[in-house]
Length: 178
Image (cartoon, rainbow, N blue to C red):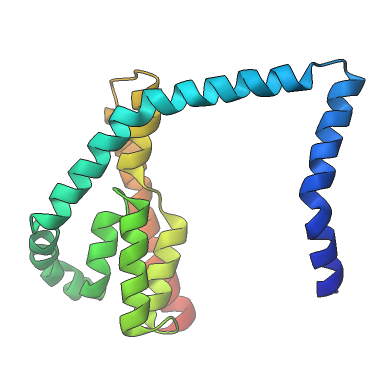
């Protein structure tokens, strides 16, 4: 069965491309010109979001290298320990809304240190899958279209992240035990 799926997956993208080209030909759409137009729009979008991307990368770098993350982790650890949440998860909770790559690095370190089959490893992995890089997403996508009033979007995104963090810990505690 696995060999059949691997064989099918090998041909999925070429078949999809041929299908798109055939459908475009059938509908009399100038496929190459439409592709070039889409590529131009993609390049223009990349140029528009570049300043927001640079600003976000610099802000994350300053936050991490200044020691602010360690200070915030230290300040919040008594509360999380009282709630039964391992304080080792706090750097991930703090960084995840800001940067996907930084939080992926934190996840890798947690898995390396504690293991994938521990409560910390499972909760951290679940957090990565159930939360979003809210600040990054808001700054890039809304900034690229010039949308300035982000208060409700940001509040809703951060509330969704908090819900994802709490649900990750609770569900992992129920399913895997603490």
